[in-house]
Picture 1 (cartoon, rainbow over the protein chains, first blue to last red):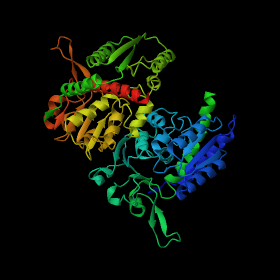
Picture 2 (cartoon, rainbow over the protein chains, first blue to last red; picture 1 turned 45 degrees about the vertical axis):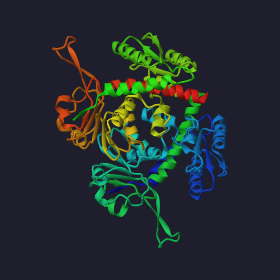
Picture 3 (cartoon, each protein chain N blue to C red; picture 1 turned 120 degrees about the horizontal axis):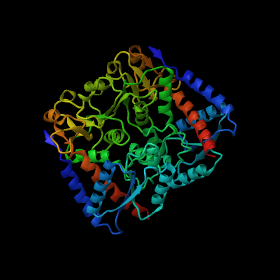
Picture 4 (cartoon, each protein chain N blue to C red; picture 1 turned 180 degrees about the vertical axis):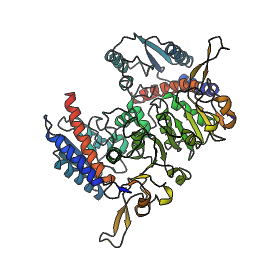
Length: 292
Length: 292
């Protein structure tokens, strides 16, 4: 079993980006984070992303709006950021309050500044295999983990657990595309799937993104499978000061010995999501300068 | 075995559309076909589409450009059609000459007039499960065949042979989405897939869209599978005056007795593609009038 060290790979990616940013001649990439309300997890994620951006020479702004902001007001604010040529990337931190249609908001972020890759244009271009599209950060991070761990994907069976817009669908599309990594035979499973274990056991690579703590057990995978665990779930743990600990969608202790490769939680996919956001921001800057 | 009669179902769809068009109060839907060059198959497809449009009360225009037109010139022509508010739908007939990047052209058709559903915005919205997106015509036609044949999809194994932008990817996404038909467990197979028969034999619904004549044989499916054959291939046939006949991607004679449902070629998916183009055109008209 090879443990895929997401922290170490993310740190390589960030080092490479840092050099790329330092060599840019037309200024500095700049990203703005849009946060609505005061969800503690969102506050902490955005802080982490800002800190990482600044550490590699990216300007990172923050716009905070009250939870009561209307959808139309939020869209007006995004239009203003779209129109500001000094801003290259815009990230609207999810989740948004319930009264706001998040997809409508994502689709209002300029496709050229959509470093989160949630805009319909970028999702569509990902299906079209257009290289200049922004790939959403978690799927792009998974592809990078697979690439840098030398896991073969061509002709392999990939099973994706989950069909979300943010992880399941785009990671499946990326690994289906004619690319390296890519060219996999991809199966999407979800809550309506019958006899799930019979399908997950066919996987050479299993990607778990369903948000159910320790859902994937050893009986559900075949020996030698590579397992990418996207879940981040809190479960009660009285031995911790906080009273909880983080676990993935995979029962790590039980599953890990059976795998060829596995990502831990935390320290697997999570750090890569942040690193790929930085990569998208640098790409946004470079593409904006090409156009000018 | 139930033969899915695409001609009959398409004719039902067209009758319904004809009534819908007759009841429109703000004018008539109008579609323009863009043809580049004189490919005989393209000429014949466009004629068929024009004739069907006119038969149900849709205005159908035609713009023909010389094969030597440059990509930029073609895009200028499309921009002019985009700007013309009397036109609700634009269809650029594929294939385009080799010197033209077809995806770039498709992405220049206004998403609101993209009745072919090939624009990145509509592909992305399909992934986002946005109901107002234009679904590309062949996948939308397959969904309609499945719906009107009462084939259950929820929780079923769907295997899609082919990963094209025009059929494979969108039909897989549509059947994966939270919809009726939909909620299927979807596997995408293609030229790089290993041990294909072991995968196709798992299918409750098999969708063949690879363009290889009579590729799917009886040994490749399980008894009771529903088979949708998207292929239209010419094979030599000395008994025909033309010297050829049309066959699908499925060896119909051999496979049909083992299936629960099967589409013939011709007379299966083909007529539905044309019918759904008409449905998209009426939708484009209705959405344009809503916006005004």
